[in-house]
Length: 321
Image (cartoon, rainbow, N blue to C red; front, side, top):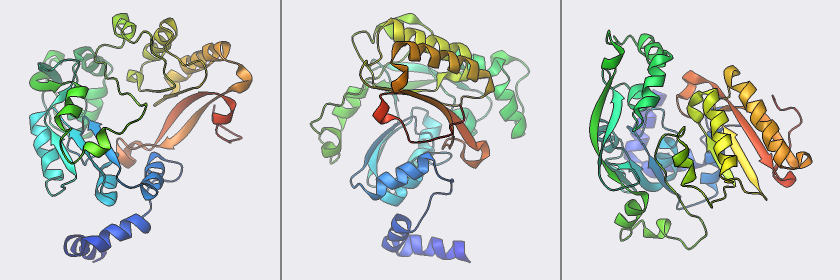
């Protein structure tokens, strides 16, 4: 009965639904979580604009769907896969604040072949689609694809070479995406005068040539997903140091999913960073946070963090690490 009433209110009296969610709704994840941070930010800010690259269907396991609906975020949602894009359009068909783009972001405007799982269009599978075939092959080799398929009762091909297919997708540079919407009603969100610059670099993170292109830049904040591989975490920091990409005055780096196999390499990275910065002004830890991707199924994520500059360190007494 309660669910039925909620649907009726949402459809017939949207302003009441909006006010309820804005002032009374609470994130389902225990605090601290990304949801809590986004919720707090949304309650204290208006005219939030988001650009989501790889939006998939815009709803399943989506970290920002609830906030787009609840707080009327505006933005551009980008999804290159045609079949998945149709689901994305359906998700936001009644939302005038959202623009959906059927394309990928790349270094050049052209058509490229995107590698994807061939035998299923399940959400977890479409979310793995990539321009890097080697990334998919690694997931196949370690049994990740078989594990998900077994969990959902999906029959896999007999040969690994039949796991992957390709789809031609249209690509646009990030700057051209912004330029395309420059004259739209979204202009005031996209082109504010500030010092923030967005760079997009596409390639294989294990190739040194990719990192060399970042020479003469200094980064203060880095989020690392690192393919969930120890060797990736290790090489990542090596390249950051080799090409002097870390800001000397203020630096924060976070690593997602620091599970047991990754902990030793994470510790080594922290030791290297401590040798570079003044250890008395650094903070490092592994936090358990409720994430977004995967919803409740995946539970808490162990997130590794390194912070340089004493006044930036969080006030906690017992980190996991």
